[in-house]
Length: 239
Image (cartoon, rainbow, N blue to C red):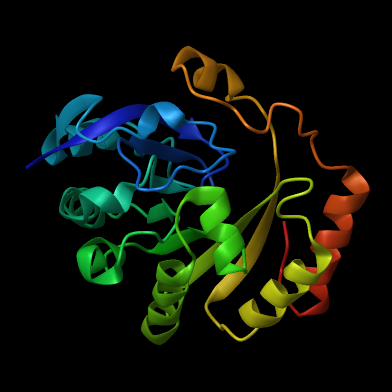
């Protein structure tokens, strides 16, 4: 079996615990206005890899990633769920921790094979408001919360990720609604509040795409801290 890969980072530090071998998958069903990897959107592009080839390369770094493991990111790795599952099986056979960084946009029935094999799910909740989520990404949040409900039943560890965009996802009422809803899940071990940045803006221009957030500033530190405290007030661990 082969899959389409955008790129690989052999010593990642921001996609799960410890040092990690991060595989960025090609293809994504969303069109997030703040995406810093729009070059991953197109499916069936990038480099073709077999799962065996990736596992062989991962094993070369096993000693370096002993504190962490392997993370599948993207793009949206669950668009290639069977391929992702093959990688996870190889990692499991070699005692390597696995994680998926996902938007949860792929219907669960199409990706459960990979979700069930992962040790950790990094779930990006774009907005608690499904209408706002669709305006921001092109799709509502129903699939993401369906996945979260499933993960609760499966007792699988989840990290929630939420990007703070001034004027878009920094509404404190929405943040409180999200915190209240997330506080009902026992499998969420932390919430990552991620400040919006424009490091990928040049990619939009190189691809001839309109970047609507060109004039949007990065969020103020005071706003980020207030948002973190809202999550903490509901008993959630925040990083």
